[in-house]
Each structure stands twice: as structure tokens, then as C-alpha cells.
Image 1 (cartoon, rainbow, N blue to C red):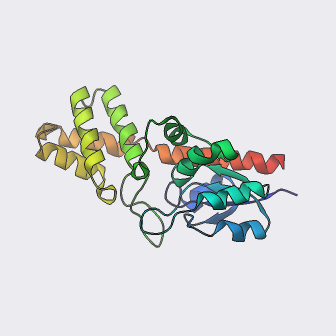
Image 2 (tube, rainbow, N blue to C red):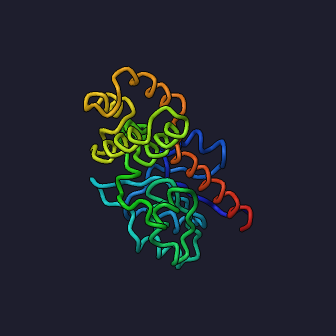
Length: 219
């Protein structure tokens, strides 16, 4: 019999899309004091993708360590999972994806790199994560859409913007307003972001699902 798995997500990838990759027990973004309940119900694999930030208590390190001590496999990536995995991989938590590696290696450090504002009913993001903006700006630079200076200036503007207010439209409008990009390039740059966003959070979320799937099959 396959091991029972529970996966906490909703922001980085929807439950509907996640089920196309893996059939599992999907839950909203994880918050503190939830894991023990699922361990007691016999879940042997836990996938942490998204979690509560800032305004409510985030999943604690001790909760994850207790799960690991109980023999549960815990996989993290993409968002809160990447953060916790970078902090607890030496204790046995499995980290996957680029964002996990960036936190692990100190390329990024702040929690707000992955934080987004969400629809409370659907968990769908209504702002854009800084990690996605970073990668999309890099793609725009590589494609010749923005110059190196425009890339650097827009990235700094995104960093300085409060996380719930980050959007491609807002970034381009404010960038033009501040003279960071020419007014006539606004639509061109925005069209690039709209059609070519690098959604690294979603990519890493899929890696979490694929890793959980392998662990289930091996159990």
C-alpha cells in the first residue's frame, strides 16, 4: 500500500493543477500546530510548498523536527517550504528547487522574497513574488528587452516595494514615472512580462510534487 501524503499549497500552484501531477491530500498553506494532526492520521510524507507568513504564526521548526523524528519524510520547496528546508536540511528535511538552493546558499535571505498577497477564498496570489520578478527581469535583460541599468533599477524598485503591492503593471508604471525606463518602452516591457513571466515558484512546486511522488512509490 502506498504511503499517505499531505501537501500544503495553493499559492505557488493550485490544488487543481497539483492533482494533475500527483493524487494526494491537498491542504491550504500550512500554519503553526497543524503537522501533528496529520502525522497522527498516518501520513508518512509531508510536502510543504506554501505557508502562512507575517500576520499569523508560521509552521515551526520544532514541528518539522518532530515529524522527522517520527520517521515522516518532509519535502519543501517553492515558498515557505524552501525557507524551512534551507534551515532544516541538515536535520533530514528534503529541499528541492532553485528557490531552496538560493536560500541555502545565501543568494537570497528575506522571507518577503517569496511572500505574496492572496485571495483568502481561493489562495490564488494577487501580487507577484520577488523571486518571480527577479527571474522575469533577468529574462527580459537576456532577451534585450531592458538594458543592464534598467534591469538593476527595476529590480531595486521591486525590492523596495512592500510585498502585497508588487505587480508587473505597478513596477513598469512606477519605473516610467521615476524615469528608470522610457515612457515609450512601458507597453513593450509589460507585454514581455505578461507573455514570458518566469514562474519559478510554480516550477519548484512541481518539483516538490514529483519528489513526493517518488517517495510514495518507494515506500
